[in-house]
Image (cartoon, rainbow, N blue to C red; front, top):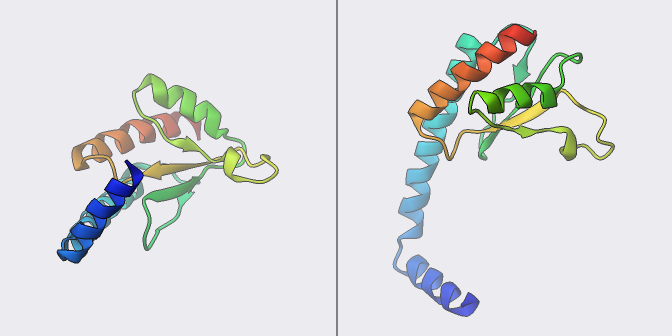
Length: 126
């Protein structure tokens, strides 16, 4: 199956279909990133910071040192919002106040709703 998939993808590239797709998804991801950034800027409480990526699929969020991303995650899941806790991304695992948010796979309405739900949790905890 692997070789067949490779031939199919080679044909896709040779037909010139990959580049237009990349242009489309870059624009889509960029619009979603901007929407998430704007909504976070509008609703997140002071004391929380985040990256403004030039590419990729994720934002990296840093909470005040005294707030555990795991605690935020536990409350967020109750409100049907999820993110990836940052602790496993650190070699020593000692940083507990970070997480990453994916803007690429969510719809624009889900981004708005998810950021709003997360913001309400953060406002209670900060």
